[in-house]
Image (cartoon, rainbow, N blue to C red; front, side):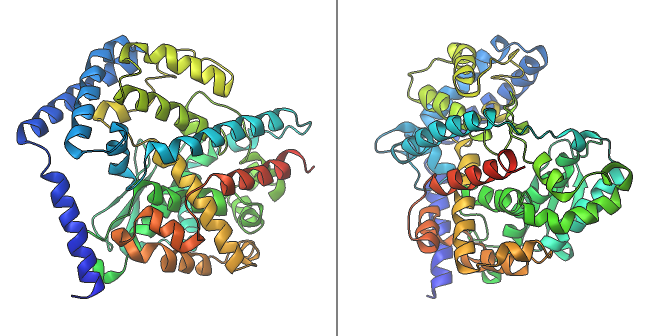
Length: 426
């Protein structure tokens, strides 16, 4: 049996073994609880009243605790749920990384506040034609390497990428005329997911290996292109004149450096999905801490609003004005997505590690961005990450590529360099 066939057998058996751990009656019960939970969350969010969701969330947490028992764990029941989205990850490994990241983030946020340079993102909200935004964004992701022969773009309420196989990868986006970032960076982000889905070794097609190895690694692909590449100053040396030609009446009075600073403004937000590259992680750490407490029964569901507001005040410096902008803003818990949130920040940490390794192997890579050349970058990702699909675990990829396990250091160094460039270099 060749190595690729062996990988398919191993992953298929792993999926079968996991699925067989759950009794049929538990599956039916969980589906019913999640269905009611989602509807109750919608009502609670509309009314901005957590109490309308409390009863359902208590049932969901109970289901997830039992799910962890069925899956099995060594030290912490939350490990079982975390492993579902990030194979091999444990609370013991993740908690110190997140704690160091939290401390460093708050310190860097203070550095931003102390800067005398105060860039704004006003230009982003100047009003940009919907059709032109889509045309520009489509041209950008095509240039990055998304293959439209095996994919397409559609409009939706919330952006996502879905794959029906390596030859049919769909991206969706939304467009706000008063916020240029939503369509552009949303599509760049989703195209990162899409290029990963298009890049598996073709010999794995239509097998269980032709999938992202974890949600954290999948997020690393979208965040690599969104943050490491397309939020760089070099990228906009190339892309800004193209954007300027698309919207001359809006952008003729500014230059690429001013635009670069505008898209990298750091300002805490109460809404996770609207947060900047730095403070976003504080939203994730907050959710991780609450989830881990819920599963270990050290936090009660009824206390979530108070704990949420307290942690938001401590980490971000303000209290959400209501539940809808606080503990009810995310849909994840309503469908049982407990253990999912950490993958977003893990994606940032992986992406920073990949990018530093890429720069060490191809020293002129950022110069290539300034010329609109991205083939070598995509080829590097294909070679080191994409082709393997699920045949390599997240930790194995990390060791194979970087020679060290996951850490927060590369990301902290990356964001500090950006802060110096945006807030301390006039």
